[in-house]
Image (cartoon, rainbow, N blue to C red; front, side, top):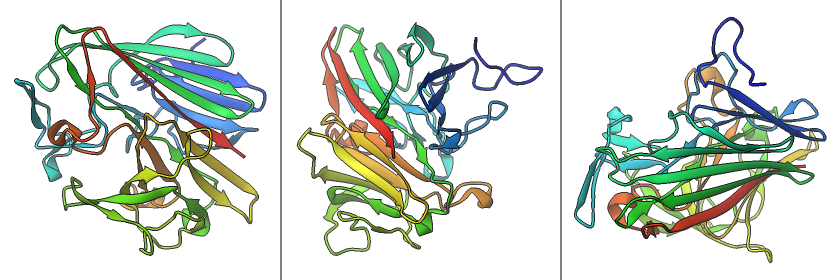
Length: 310
């Protein structure tokens, strides 16, 4: 049965639990949000409580664009979009349109949950999409599979991202990070990309594991070195505590946003976890067109990423 807050309905709606051995995950009705992931009762994700409203994008699905959309406006093949500026200080729309919508159960088993959502045409996005997110737990952790189908009569532009915050229950300054990227996006004061830059030899070079220390990250990385299975893996390690966690992404995710949480409110939560956000395209892709998926009418896109606690 769905878990609800004591005496009232949870702000994030129905709560769906899945499990596999020592692994437990909670996903919410609102936004198909990955609210909690624990192994043996220890947190893998820095999520939010059942009585709380999701903040800072924790565990949310970011579609039909991830990250920021400058001025909330764009044009695509004669269709104009104008989304609400929900990052008003920077005059941006941020993280898409589905993260506060209710999602419906498509299928559910002990270790698998699929939630679906239809995004209907609106001023910020003129196309109709069907989105299905499958969360599957196994011996190697959590696999998240996204399938997006264009239900409209014209080609639809599309991007997707996810916003998990990893935690090893220790301040991130004393943990090691590896990001298999050759380049990073250079952003302006609004967080919008202006160019790319090689990371080799820079303070943002995590191509080999190294301590995070006082490095501040709110940075998109790309041009991944992939393993023989085609996956790119971002690894967070606490060697002293003997814990680690990996976020892996298939070839459909060519970008990852890494955020050390230096601006999170309240200040006591800053740098206690690190967001590692798989993205199919860079920020502002609806305006730039860079790596934006073009979905033909009736066509589908699918991509996988996951979390492997060690």
